[in-house]
Image (cartoon, rainbow, N blue to C red; front, top):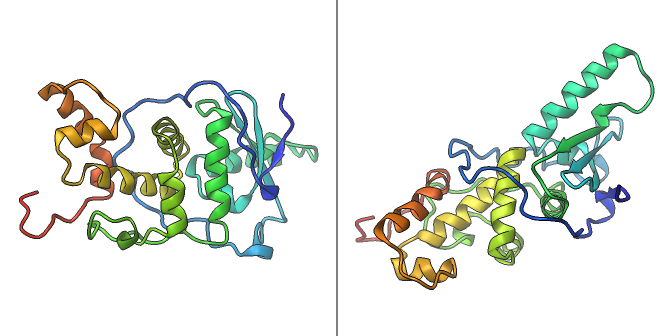
Length: 234
């Protein structure tokens, strides 16, 4: 097993296998929990938790130790940690308990590293409330910070896809909202030819394939709808 990484000291981007599993059907009903867990300030990280940390374990057994402020950004991890801690308290065992570990069998280490990296950035810098519908085809106008815009724009398509899947599985709603904004703006006013270039498709889409691509990302447009341009029929 790879040595445990302390997220508080910075996360290195570990190698890993393929994409962090999961279905392409991302839950469209996820709403933004803007600022959820991200409001803990420097010395206050873990305040009220006795300085407790939890270790995220990826599918390929890479480990990332994170403060509870990060755990709380993930509804899945929060539920897993609290349930396991309660079971261990009932056992009366004072040793290390599984409440200190959250297993994420559908997320590869290389993907989890990026998710943890993003969450750590927002421990002291809460994710903003995103304007809905998005005012224009511009992330900054929607309230997205320059740093978050640069981070999400810097991802390759493969990385982006894997992070969307991981954020959905882990229920990191603020990260999922950021990704939804990026996707919604990808499709804003795009022609089929522009969509092909966006996804590096060299052949023509059939009408069915074009509809499939749009349907695949419809959840993002529901989560982060874009305001039509003035005079547009969108």
